[in-house]
Length: 246
Image (cartoon, rainbow, N blue to C red; front, side, top):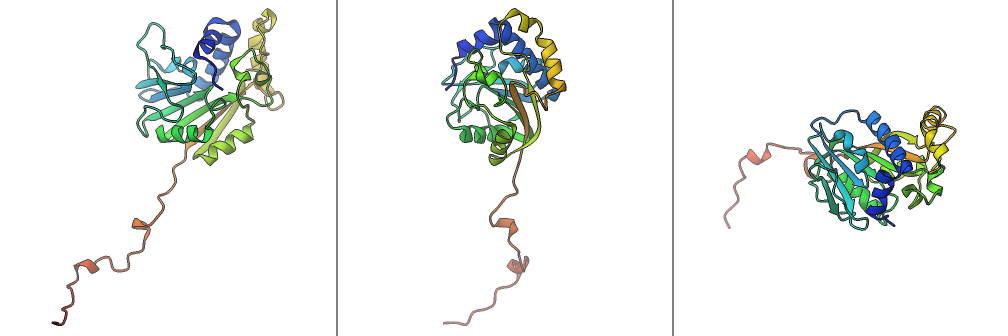
């Protein structure tokens, strides 16, 4: 079940908790991908809060928003880059995307396999994707007060196995959002401290969000063609034997 785009916008842009979550996740994205100069960067689901650092240097930024969720113009005050699309049919050419961020997309999709197939299609050679999903062991997946409390939460093993099955090679994974998913003032004032503490002990204390970076895996071509052994490659140039008259 997808959340409505208005609810997502209100959370990330109009609530203190949402702005703190946006910053924590975006900081990790920028740390993983510090530079996207000359590249095409796309986000699917509601990933636009994570794309702002790439607006200036990227060749192109695309915000793909699924039809069941709805779309909103983004970024505010600038030329719109967001577009409404079908979950498993994106208006993007094959191999066009260099970097893809997916947030609030995979865990809410009824056909996750088809969604990952489409993500694999749009990535170009050497392309990388970053999947941001609720962590099964984290507090955020158990709270209905945030968008991460909806959909299917994942463990690292579950997500990596699913990615491998659909042609991705997991490279790195991280967790973030160690602060409690609470709007209370005390937790908001100490949010930065919890994030710093959580990154230090993350193997023990699971964050609320799981992030897995994966590269596109391209298989060698299968079937006949050039893989067949040619015993006499120049035989076509040999003269044909004369046939006896009938």
